[in-house]
Length: 138
Image 1 (cartoon, helix red, strand yellow):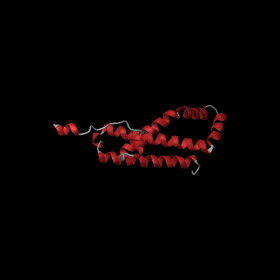
Image 2 (cartoon, rainbow, N blue to C red):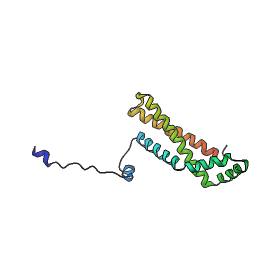
Image 3 (cartoon, helix red, strand yellow):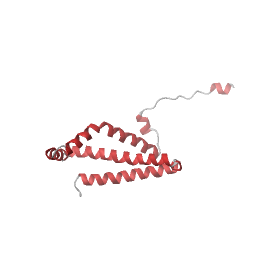
Image 4 (cartoon, rainbow, N blue to C red):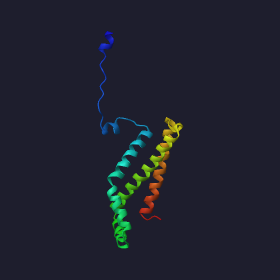
């Protein structure tokens, strides 16, 4: 009994985002989960901007021309590209979560890693296709 009294008690402290990003090696499924939350936050924060763009594109022919001029700015194109990535990634990760909810066999370490890879690859391909279209490749 004396041995148990001499052991120091472990300290549990709250950790910050810096420690999560640098000290911990998250599995790929954990990183995809965090990116899913980040992309959802981006979409929520930029919702007024997206609604403004949508409104400008539908109001009239003149406002559509103003919208096209606004979208020709490289900074706006980059912002739209980031938001397109956020939407496409959030959508793909959401489909992943829905399939895991419907199929409990998909909730394992191996399947979590493989579905995370699928989410990253599919959302990256879709984002690249959107970027090519946005910057006028086709």
